[in-house]
Amino acid sequence: MQARRAYGTLLFAAFLGIWLGSSLSVAGDDRFGGVRRSVLQGSWYPADPAALQGLMTQFLAEADPPLPLEGRVRALVVPHAGYRYSGPVAAHAYGLIRGMPIERVVLIGPSHRWRIDGISIGCYEAYETPLGRVPVDRNAADRLVRADSSIGFIPQAHAAEHSLEIQLPFLQTVLGAFEIVPVLMGRMDSATCSLLADSLIRVMDDGKRTLLVASTDLSHYHTDAKARELDRRFIHYVEDFDPKGLLAALAERRCEACGGGPTAAVLMAARRLGADRCAALDYATSGDATGDRDRVVGYLAAAVVESRGAP
Image (cartoon, rainbow, N blue to C red; front, side, top):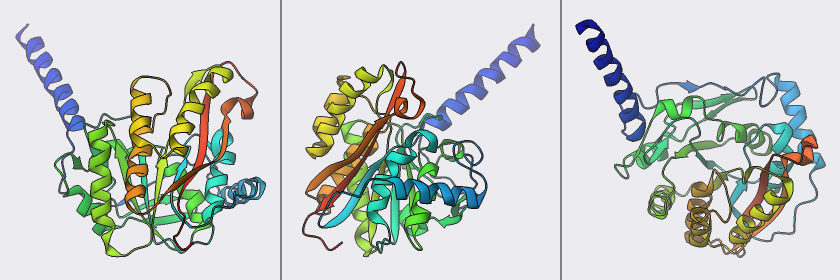
């Protein structure tokens, strides 16, 4: 009996340790400890480099000509499902930045598989896909981790997360050499979004030409008609450049998005960088890819632009 109680106590302690480790964003000594390997190749996208590159080229070629958005693209809103479902939508956003002199991309997505009570920065040396390795901007990542006690590095959160990795092959295809700052959000209230936006503005004072990317899918598992109704509201707040209204609508369940916090934070930061306009570029549901209209997920591509900025 005593052995059983001791085992139970140890088991409880182990689970408590896991819970505490996932709910606190603590900067550890293992930052920049190696390469974050692909966990999506062979499932969410092809593992063969030639096949993956061909798919990227196909999506970008088939995307409608981008809207005439004069000015500088400060940020994108893109989906993060498997390429079969969301790739054609994402291509409308990524085609807009093809060949632009972007040196750094801040990727912000939700943490789907690990609880984060705050924000986690992917402090690796690089992220790897079949198209090669993308280095992490170590200085920017480290400055973010040091910006606030609620910002840290939780390796478990990044290990199997798809919302950031799924963006990389597109970026590797449309840009030259660039670095990334991988950011995952757990808490997505207004205060956390404002904190992240403020921290990003301070970190981005180094003169590097930076693009912000919010990774989000929209409504989940409604009928196609209901999904489009909910998603129209989300798109309305994005195009109105209204992050506070968006967060309120999400809290009141008038719309849905797993990456609502990343979207709001990106809008907040982009506004302070000079952006003054948002435009939806493309929208679809998974039903457009599968034909199943009973349980769908919504996908949006949008651009946030500084009208007077140089392209």
